[in-house]
Image (tube, rainbow, N blue to C red):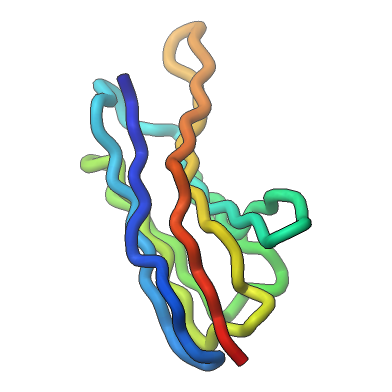
Length: 118
């Protein structure tokens, strides 16, 4: 059974930094894509950064402030968040998705809370 576990969230003042990590276990194959999503209170979940084999795409509002990376061999992902703003507050989720053979997979972590105070 594949599991994703996020860590690194917390409370930080505006302008501060946090680094999120996503560790996976139970996978016997390398993930096609890994991504970071977030969900603010009362809002829909949104994609923050999507890391594919070719490129990394970011939500417009985090460009230049967040940097996503991954270790393809270990199936881990990271999100370096700098110059944090109160509007970055939310629960951040790690996602792994793709296809192996005829099987489509889409795994989610439990999320880690990020709170940015003004």
